[in-house]
Amino acid sequence: MTLRQIIGGIILLPSMFAIPLVWLSGAILHFYTALIAYGLAGPGWWGYVAAGGVLMLPVIGQIAVFIGAWSVTGNFLNGYSEWLFLWLIFVALLFGLMALGAWIGKTEKES
Image 1 (cartoon, rainbow, N blue to C red):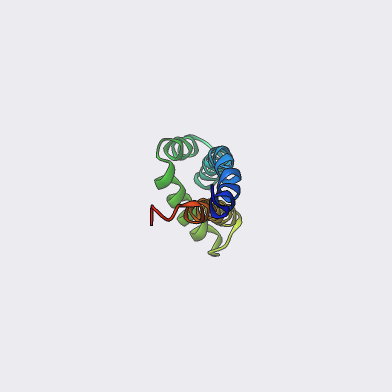
Image 2 (image 1 turned 90 degrees about the vertical axis):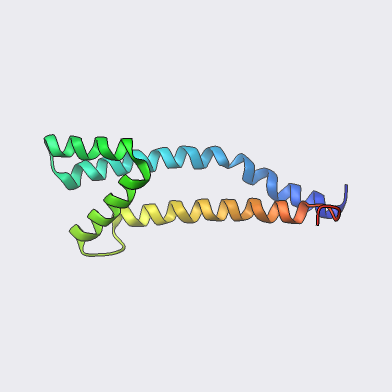
């Protein structure tokens, strides 16, 4: 085992253990999105429909809530979009770290 493979493993191993954090934080963000959708649609029947729609269609629901919160507040960066962007940055950094560890750890035979 070369030094390059050891360094790649040191970088890759902790980032692989962080994948359950992505799942957990994604679930939390998903339920937060449903709460925001309920609040944007208003209490009552339409609030339940909006929250149920977000829970059934996660990505489409998050995009719709992002656009809805943007139109209601008038600001691109609002309370919901900040959490959404922070989560996306966290996931991108994690996968970037995993790619870096895999790239550093590859052997010369694989190149």
